[in-house]
Length: 133
Image 1 (tube, one colour):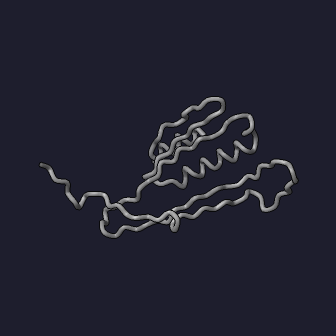
Image 2 (tube, one colour):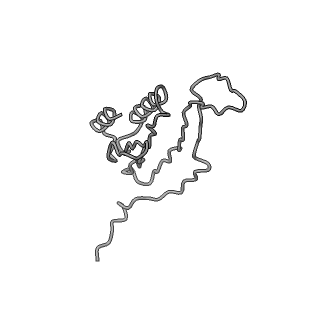
Image 3 (cartoon, rainbow, N blue to C red):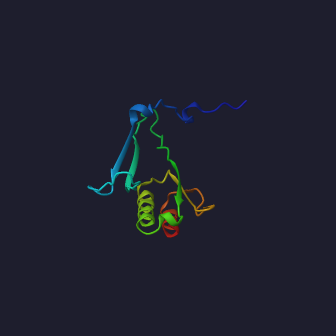
């Protein structure tokens, strides 16, 4: 019977999302005028950050990447500045992701279309995804 090498096993770490997760909403504009009884869109950026947990028991541990699948509305309601902001945000996200992360872009209107497969965020793939955006 083959026994796994215990030194090479991945470690599991308890990670409390209630303590280590930050949720932040930043408005795009500092001031807006709101009208009563009228639905309005307030453009902004939602950011979710998890604090890093450093594992010191095994120096060969690598940071685990994230799989980021972006589902983008491209219907008529997203014309003009809205879709421009989405494209800028997607480009910024690609620059922020590490080589361990994977990214996929899916759009929808009346049906969905997968524009990119789930790919690692290496330099060549980042350039490919930015061209698609």
